[in-house]
Every structure is written in C-alpha cells, then in structure tokens.
Amino acid sequence: MTQIITTIIISILPLILYVLFGTALARFCHFEKAHADAVTKLVYYLLLPANLFTTAFTADLNTRGLFFATALSCVLVTLSCVLSVFVARTVEQERKKRATLASILWKGNYTMLGLPVAAVLLSAEGYVIYAMIAVVMSILTNIIIIPQLTLMLQQGQKDGMQKALKDVATNPATLGAVLGLLVRLVTPSLPAVIMTPLNGLTACSGVVSMIMIGISIGVNGLSKNGRLIAVTGLFKLALFPLLFALAGYLAGIRGPGLGALVLSAAVPPGINAGILAGAMGADGPFANEAVFAVTVLSAASLFVWGVVFQFLGWL
Image 1 (cartoon, rainbow, N blue to C red):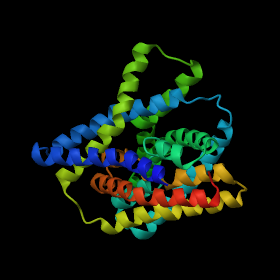
Image 2 (tube, one colour):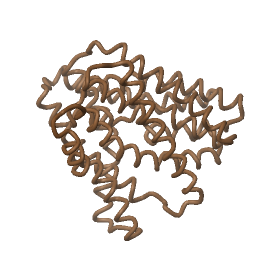
Image 3 (tube, rainbow, N blue to C red):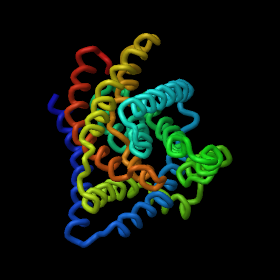
Image 4 (cartoon, rainbow, N blue to C red):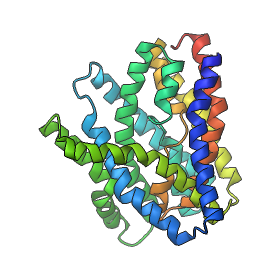
C-alpha cells in the first residue's frame, strides 16, 4: 500500500511542480498572452508532432498480443469519444467550451503518468497489457481528437465540413503520427543523427506542455469553470473507469487484462489536450485548468483504484 502511494505521488508531483513553475514565470517574469501563444505554437508545431512520430515509429509491431491491444484500444477509443461528445452536449451549450470538454474527457495521460502507475498497481502480465494499450491509444487518440475537435468547432458553420477535412489533413499532430507509422513500415530503424534530436524533442514535450499549462493559468488567471472541471473529474476519474470495468467484465475479460483496461480509462486527461484545444481555436485556458485540476485529483482516485485492483484480483 505504501509503495502505491509513493509511486503515485512521485509520478504526479513533478507534473504539479512544472505547472507551478510556469505560473511563476508568467507572474514574475512578465509573460504576456503573446509569449504564451508563442510557446503554444512551439509545442503544437514541433514538440507534439515529434513526440507522436517517435511513439508511432518505435512501437513494436511484432509484440505478442498487439492485435488484442489494438482491437481493444479501437473499441475503447470509439466508446470514449462517443460518450464524451454526449456528455459535453448534455452539460454545456457554448460551442468552444463544449468541444473542449469533449476532447479532455476521453483523451488520457497514458504514458507519462499511466506507465509508472501501472508498473506498481498491476502485475507483470497486467503491465505488459497496459503498456501495449497505452502505446496504441496514444497514437489513436492523438489522431482522432483532431477531427473530433474540428467537427465540433465547425458545426453549423458555412463550409464547416470542408474546412474540417482540410484541418484534419494538414494538422501537425496527425501528420506526425501517420508519418511515424509509414516510416516504421518501410524501415525498422533510422540513423542516430535523426533519432537523437527526435528523442530529445520527445523527452521534453511533456515537461514543456505542463509548463505551458502553468503559463496559461498565470496569464489568463483562473476562470469560472468550476462546474465543468468538476464534471471532467467525475467522468474521467470515476464514471468512465466504472463503465469500462462493466463493459470489460461483460465481454469476458478478467484479471490483469481487466485491470489494464480500467486503468487506461482512469488516468487523468492527456497533457497536450490543452495545447491542441488552444491551437485549434477552442477554449485553451479552460482545457489547461481542467488538465491541471484533474491531474491533482487523480492522486486520490488512482490510489482508490489500486485498492480496488488488489481487492478484486485485477492485478
């Protein structure tokens, strides 16, 4: 039990500190909205595509069980997206906030936070299953979130569908992930002169994104989004995992596989959700606040899920 608490704190505390560091930069180093927008563009056009390219390219396509992980991830992504859009349409009427809420409800922090937590909460078998699900879902969600956000933002607009298709086809995140998969199919390795800078950009993308969240909060202040943040926390950390547990159980999944399935739904929103929302014209400040708040709340919820996993034998 102590190990679970320690690992969760060690995994989440650096993310909180990065956000606080970004807030301090905004407050004491005279950051303005133009500076925040510049950092957002850096992440959106360079760090995020590099991260997705590296994730897709380094995925072990020969891993045993990859087909199961891929099929399960596709079902999860579809179910999560549909449920998130339904919830967002139900609780929020303003178009930008509704699109933003839908995107952060279903996109999870599968790798940066999920992997170290899975290593403690799950058995070796469960961790392997979760790791495969995490890689596949990271790629799928970052590709699918682009059309989801674009279509919801363009709904009711003139030539909305045409613009949505154009935005999806030219989005840096989509291009990075697709290019990574295509290159991986052609060659299993790339020269060090290419991979070294890509790995460096990938390593700092999460850190810079969390600092960016802090800068956004420092520049824009805390908005009156408490109700929507509470909805995000309730669905992302409790109701969605319960729903996935029920769906997995009814589908015949048991033990470590069920634990990995539930954990993939229980992690807080993905760090770059706020970056994508802001860069694509949605409500970036709300997304950044929600990512930070729900990540903090996940320290308690992940501990509870760890106790549940042990009690029910989902390890």
